[in-house]
Image (tube, rainbow, N blue to C red; front, side, top):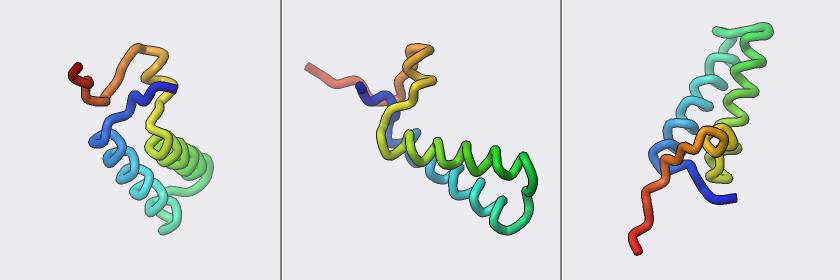
Length: 69
């Protein structure tokens, strides 16, 4: 897997995951929508740690800086 998630993108994903978790665990968002946000947050954390997003790969997008030769 070639990394396609840049450092700024990783930070944004982690922050969003924390917001989603806070919304769920404080009871602001409950039910099915709360579970969806938790799952999305978990996916954001996982893709941030791995540095690869399959959706980015499918559409040919990358937020990693290009390497100079």
